[in-house]
Length: 292
Length: 292
Image 1 (cartoon, each protein chain N blue to C red):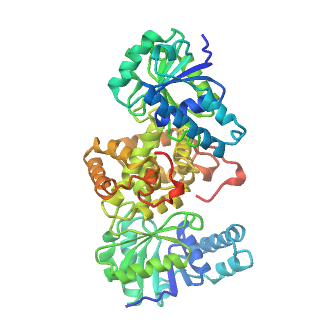
Image 2: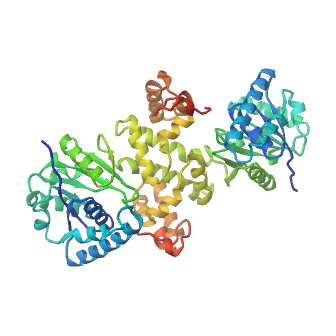
Image 3: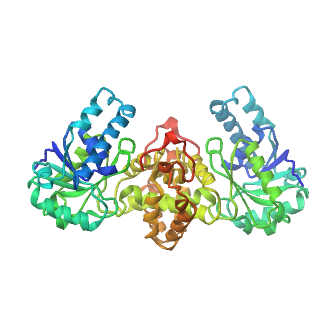
């Protein structure tokens, strides 16, 4: 069986959901963006307008009106039944709360056409934790995007043991079709590939700073020169934002909780949350801030 | 007290010792290179000639005869007493065997002038493990270079609690004077800064490959895109060389020994040792090989 994907519904129009919807629409798919009420949809319209401006400035080939056309092509709906009625693919990007995700897949299982593939954008759960709520575990897997998908365009594709290989391939092809680099995992792994490396790496870097071996600037310089990287761990944490790092660390092991407390005391409590607030481990000129 | 450094003796003319001697001479210091016998010195002469050719091709400003003059300016000696008789700074770059290092510092303590600063290039030992053999713990610390120092020009500077802060500063200044980026550590840390991050990072990457989550190419791509790096973990391991990685891993914990066995079985036993042999995780065209 082959799966043709033309109509895509994105559930959730937050920072990442709106980027996914926009990127998908830009590549010629029919996109419907769903969120819970009219207020959320108003915020979504703003996000799409801002994304159109960003793409106009930054993305080659999007300066000729394409970006604006893309923004206006996205259908917005707060009626879930309507939003998914004719979907070939539903991309779930609702808040990272297991009960919210389970609930929406349960509702979807009854509202979406039988042919529809469901993917979750979760970065913290395994698709196995959600599959039994989808009513179609063979047509369900994870498709995990990074933030600022037009630049950091990985799409990690991770199925469960029940995912139909043809569905997996269709989602890999879809990811490539919207300009992503599909990252194929052969089996489930908490943290997928990127965070499975990024977390031990940044924990090691945090340990060096928290325990007083060296300053963040010195640690970053070491990494940049030693590994030919453009950014060190603290520069990357500034981009990710400290709230996100703090949330992950504070639910971790003893060392991680210690790092979380250090981040809170020395940065978060002083309003330094990274690039988004103009200061984190480094200072950023006002015109250089970026969406968190 | 201030320390003036003009005459520098480098002990050991292996891959890294020869690079350190050459780089130091290139920046106008009087350099003596010591090794154990005439055979070793003959090999050293070859290394300096090759380095001269490399610098001529790759280092701006070294194409006008400077590189050749540098190579011929280095005094070679297998007489330790002669080699260090008038040294302001002795850089130890002998094999990473604790007894060899302790022995040479014991001999040095009697042969070098009282004013001479001693530094060890060790990457695996702490300077505290060597300081009692130097006869001058206040004038002793670690100055750790990475391989291919003209490109990866970090010099990690790490003292013991007994190191005189003025000596520490003098070594930091010396590192900068020979074109290194001094990386200042405030206290002793096994693995210094770079390996304290690099090892957890590459272990995480190896775990993903060894346990079958994804292929090295996919893991590297994820890292490059996700962190804006020019190279992923497996590309970096190819540069470092698998013998070095294997030695470190095989003396490690249970997981690390498992990774070592995997490296041996799938790569080392097949003659694939990384860039130096033309193939590691990736293949390298013959004209692109680099010294291990």
